[in-house]
Image 1 (spheres, rainbow, N blue to C red):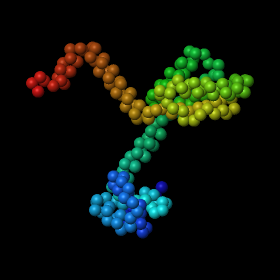
Image 2: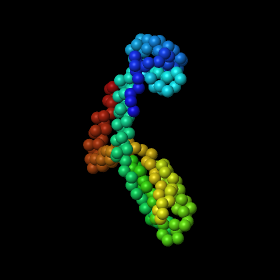
Image 3: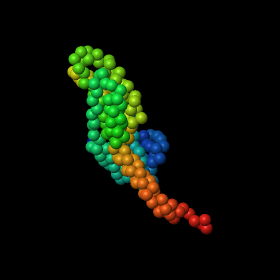
Image 4: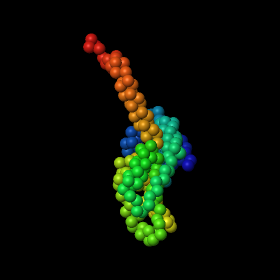
Length: 210
């Protein structure tokens, strides 16, 4: 995708102008839009070239490009770090096995990974796909606190799959996990050395004289 036209590169007679704060200025001659951008010591950026007339916004283009690049980088990192974990079921699964699968999927989602739930049909079970759909829908409801359905149940021969995406991205999940581990370590230190923990707390508290 090419960069948008800016400032003197915008070769039109008029634009629908948006101010630096997002306010609608209206349709103005290009010369007026350029003058307002210069007075604000900002850039005029054509954000919707195919509109009639084109839409241009007054902004700090350098800052805009930097923030857009950072967002794209973060999105690529989260996408690269996200792993598709698989949880397999039989159509006639017992309660204990189901709970084990549910907890495993919750762990994957809490860590920021996607989960592919797969039902393996046996024999004539393949002719009863509605039972597989009900099982996967129940599974999605049971782990709704951790993830949301990305792709609904689909059958491919003897398998039926559904993909669930985590509610938290990989970086947020990792940060939360690290914070919890740090809290546990602090609690363990406090239990093993209560006097030291008390002294540290008193040192951090403001003195009465202050």
